[in-house]
Length: 258
Image (cartoon, rainbow, N blue to C red; front, top):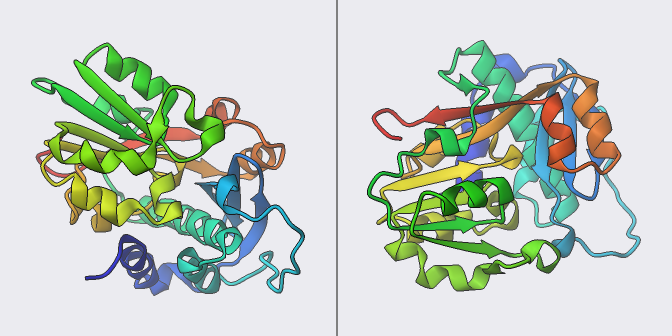
């Protein structure tokens, strides 16, 4: 079976009539996020997994600026995490352009919590500490368990290695898009098959939805961005709270799901 990453690359790559001639015009790899702006102005964001990137000086052989989009997209499957985040950010930028061109039914100015029908949910699991969401869920669901990979971001959450025993019995599961970056997304979705609601959320989850919908995801919540402002904010290592006014949140629901 193909992976989520492989299917995402296929989903954007086959729309060649939209990709031809596009290049990367700006790239910023920073502490919180990585940002890529295409030559048509569309911007994609991706979580930068600082815990998985070696903190040593290495000689980089690639020049991301002015790279063809097709080559940049292929980096999303790289095992070099600096290349990988640039590739996924490119997939997200290209996804927003493609969804605009093809009139996808996105609900703009809404976030993942707005799209969750939590009636009857007793147990929720959040993988990736999305703090504003967790606070809202704790006011609606009896038991909310939170898992986070990065020790510096973990706070009162548990290591994500412990999520496996709780995901199969959760009613609602929300997974951060960062799971696509660290490669855990396929396993997490497989473990979440019994959940009534499965959502993928965050700036990193801003890609075309079909590969995730085919795997049982019912809601995708991402961001739309265009122009220099968000790229500059990322270059200054700003948090999403500071980037938020520069992007537009949206949700996409799988037909008949909430």
